[in-house]
Length: 124
Ligand code: 5GP
Ligand code: ZN
Image (cartoon, rainbow, N blue to C red; front, side, top):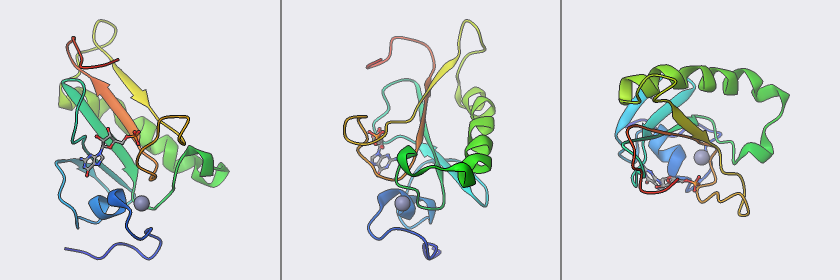
């Protein structure tokens, strides 16, 4: 098991998942992005995409993050298809970024929900 990087936030569950210190069902990993299945999926496909670096939320994002966020967005369609989302336009998927308490964010490490697969879903 590797140590979390120096910029990891102490006691951040998603930093620990990205570092392999807390187990998860991994979907994808590269040097800056980690993708894993949500522990409480509410659709047949429900995974989370996170930057390995600790960014608390979209509220902390600035121009310096544009490349990273663009790469995360661009990865999503291929991973969604691999994980069982049906083809557009009959299929498709939803991408959600909850931000802050009023935005419904519970884990304060930036993450993109990718949700899809045949309906019905548990919610949404
Ligand atoms: P938020 O409400 O912050 O947008 O979403 C947090 C998501 O993280 C929830 O859907 C929740 O099920 C998921 N989650 C929370 N803790 C863990 C964990 O330890 N492992 C995994 N795989 N997912 C988690
Ligand atoms: Zn973190």
